[in-house]
Image (spheres, protein in one colour):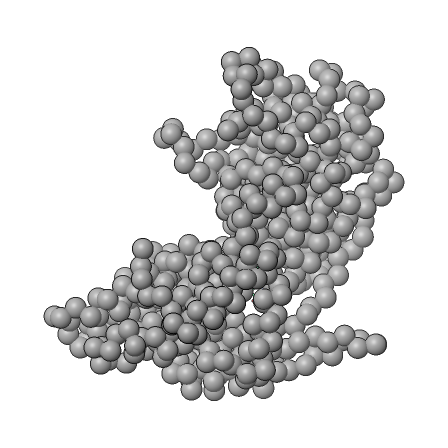
Length: 502
Ligand SMILES: Cc1cc2nc3c(=O)[nH]c(=O)nc-3n(C[C@H](O)[C@H](O)[C@H](O)COP(=O)(O)OP(=O)(O)OC[C@H]3O[C@@H](n4cnc5c(N)ncnc54)[C@H](O)[C@@H]3O)c2cc1C
């Protein structure tokens, strides 16, 4: 594999074809977006950077004539660096015209994760690999470059990002390297919000990444196996089989529902010797679960969860999490060995590290205009959970992120010397909301377009569950996933969930 220095140099020699950067030496395609967005100062900075990188490349080439080059590096196209492989960036790199731009994706995660089905993988209804899409596979099909690294710093003035390897390195320190860009697109998402509650980071599980779901699944397994040991007291077994979910939003509710399915459908079969009945406790600080839904659907969801043997505790917030305890605001202590925390999202370290010129007033998001351009920049854009549009607040959901990815890719594709990227305005069109409630039931609010407007149709029970399953099935990007997911559902229905741990 080519080292980062070589990759960078190869890209720069594509971007700067001669030793002295002259506009006439660039291809018309390259010149158009550059001339419309880059100032003379930033062009000079890119030039100096690229000349140095090319010298480094020549040095490396001399010592290693067999080194490989990335496929698109030789093309003289504007370089778009895309951060993240989530909903927004995945849609962006699928839709942008790769004949018009040389795209490099940088992300510590080498896959796109279909988050709406993550809770199903946490109990084994679905397998982890069924809901992820390889970015390498997409990169080879669409012809873009991918670097598995995280960006630790963005230098908006000099048009470059600083990266740190997210893969194995034989050095003690992870490899670090810069990547210059003509355009930057930031889609780094967000992190779980702990609201500063002590002990959450140390003792609770989150449900954000595929690895989180795997950890939760392993812990559930461990709790049941530990509860099977011969010398366990009744109290120890009760503690091991008490599962606490914090947060009554869609993720918390869906995980609690999946867990009750697993306990009802599989645990009696797998652990017939355990007499104690497992408990699922769902804690929600406000007065309702699924607060984004209408009151009638919220009430339905509450009744349904209770019927599923999920103990919903409304108006109860968590004061502290200890190794095997959850301490509530009223002083009550719940003994447990499995706490899943799902109370919304907050900014990533990279967002917090940016200068306040680029951030919203509360410093929680990157500030963008309606064309998704980052405040006080000319050639940098942001979308998805990490961004907030001035005066147009949208929920942090996949629908918004994906539509923004599509919008921005269209903007890049339509750009000409006369038309800058981001001069159109983004408008969100909600297609509704769905939540799974367990045992073939759910709630849904579906937006149905009418000749004049949009009408919301409310569904509950089996119909909502069917819509939930069909809706997500059609949303899965690759045929591989569209086959794997129903296959997993069928397998679970016939044979039950696979309880093994490895
Ligand atoms: C369990 C769960 C269920 C959900 N269910 C739904 C649902 O049913 N419907 C819905 O609409 N929404 C749902 N959401 C919300 C939805 O997943 C998010 O809104 C969406 O993922 C946001 O997309 P994004 O592209 O902004 O960020 P993400 O999808 O979070 O992607 C961020 C990407 O940036 C990368 N990254 C992070 N840091 C760096 C860095 N420093 N440098 C480079 N790359 C970086 C990450 O590795 C990742 O690839 C759910 C979320 C979760 C966790």
